[in-house]
Amino acid sequence: MIKKIRLAEILLMTGFVLIALPFLPVETLSSGHVARNSSLLFLANFLLLVAVYSANSFFGYKADRLNPRLRDHQFSSPRKYQVVTLVSLATALGLLSTLNRDLPYLGILSFLLWVFYSAPGGAKSRPYLGTLVHLVGQVLQFHLCIVAFAPPTLSTLAVSIYFGLLFASGHLMHEVKDHESDAAAGIRTNAVVFGTARLIAFYRLAVALIPVYWLLLFCAGLLNAEQFWPFFVASGAHLALTLFSPLSPGGERFQAAYRVLYFAAGVVTFATSPGWAV
Image (tube, rainbow, N blue to C red; front, top):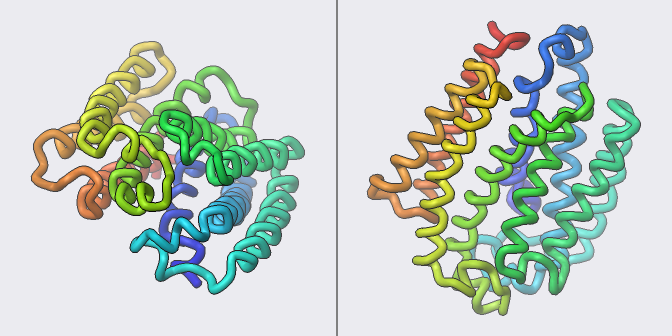
């Protein structure tokens, strides 16, 4: 069951919601309801992502049977994914409504964006557009947390773009891993259209530019030092790993290594940022 709903990937995406917490205004974090509301937000977003991944598995059921990474972890019928999608989505929206009356609308928008990605003829089969969906999708995920506690601002948008870039570039490596099965299924991802070598070269360029963007946010005064340094160091280490590591981009060990870097950065940010320092 855990592998059928792709629990590991769902929990990874949930982190893109919770990482917004240290970037909330300090006065917001003084509320005694932060811990409770954060737990509700985690559960609601988890269920929303279960709905997203189940919808993806429903639409891609036949194509996933050609993918050795996914075919052994499918439900026996695509209809089961429909049931999981509807139940999870309804429960998630109900929980989001208890946090903020505007959150269900943002949740629905996020869900529909991912349906647009995975539906037949959708963004998954269109170079560039699939990557853009991953960028925008994570901006929305980040703001599920922001809107739960405080009004969104241009500053939160700018910060969320950094995490969106990380996620979108990371997805390029999923395309590299799934290149052969996607090609066999007729799915025109970036890796299929442009080739894995060109996509890895673009990925390295993106990884080089992401810490520059983070530095610009810091210089513009949109980040304090506690927020800036952990992720700047992680981005720098990620770049070094990309350029000099013997691990191949697109490989499981490579992805695990840079995910550890950003997880550590998140832990340090929580531990040192005002309002969360322990």
